[in-house]
Image (cartoon, rainbow, N blue to C red; front, side):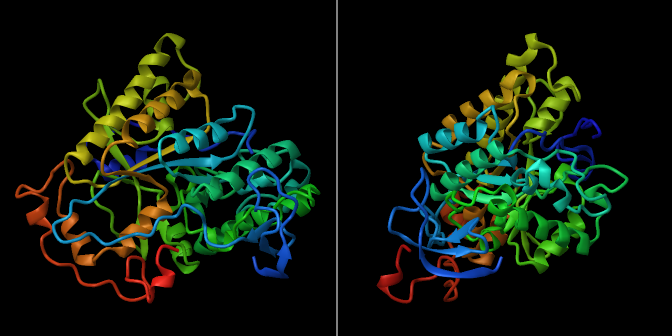
Length: 431
């Protein structure tokens, strides 16, 4: 992992090279079968209600249980309407370990009217005894730079994934072995190798019961083949070929890049929902909206630096994210995308900072703290001409003539069947 270099404000191309990410450390964490209409398993916390009917998929590790709860219907902006301020909090390599940070931030999200995106590492669903089932591109079977999991870790992670989805959060993927740099790193993978990696990540999620022997456990209440619509690559590497593979597989967005705080556009047919550069208090350059990059620019690659500086470093991250938020909220209203890890780097100061940022921004008027799926749904619901107009706004710049005038043109009606279109009849409204 190369240390992140200093990033000059607006230097997006240079920043993309400079932001190698640590990703995840060890210790965390199809086709439908013929069981349609089978009653759900015995209710566990977060499982489908007793007596509900589910469609088990494959070995029953996952199941279709209906539309995801708490997923709002996107609506088109009305003429002259100011856009909401979207904020996305996302987590790389999501899994529940002894730190209990997955469960903590689920609670924080609920307390602050937020939903989030959890990028699950597939090997967190694979016990280390079965490690040879993973055949990473350009590496020998059973190799992973973030290790594998144990039965308790898998059980704890499944519990959190189950409840997170039922609360309206999104489950994406952070792939598997987290290989960075030269000699087989994801930056060297071909399109076909990315497809193989994605297929394996899906398979580990869809077969955790078989691989662990926990056959009596409740399933994950979603069809992962349909749930999986986006990702962030390890260390932000290999993006070009990943996006090509993802587009062919029907993904809807990618968040593996670095951008300024402007409105997103599509790349290879996918929404480019990159993380962004925000002010870095005490410095003249800007900083990527990720805990790992704050850490590298504060304590280098040491995950536990000078304890006397922990509070300062956390405050820098908190205040940098808040400055980025305020710049968008009072300016061009571009969505703010933030990426993090369930880690206690530098004494957990970055987790404290995120607690404070979530509590501060998610309860403000016209703010929506959402998952990438919800943001993509909203973007898909808008008139393309409206989005093109929004993309003309520079970082932190509100329309000089005001929002009512800037977006006064009446948008074209949404085609039938796309998000935001009027329902065919009242019976479908709000589903």
